[in-house]
Image (tube, rainbow, N blue to C red; front, side, top):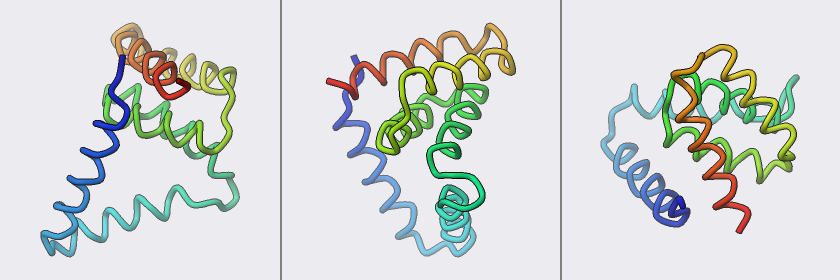
Length: 112
């Protein structure tokens, strides 16, 4: 089981430290990342599902947690998440299977 509050707290605490460093390039990159996930031609939910696919392919469990959390906040269904994970497997191959397992664990933990 994934410790939801611990992961959220860690991300918030570390983002605060990183942004407080005063490094302009880091601050600009964080701002770009934030803007990229705003609604536009693609709805936020679609962008978060895309972020989930990229996170699985890149095998970043912290990112998988974040994007599943956001997908659920944006109203993504289990079916939408599962289809996105299937795309991630097609792109990432069998090496992404452990990350898909993690994604299922995260979703189960978030829905409790």
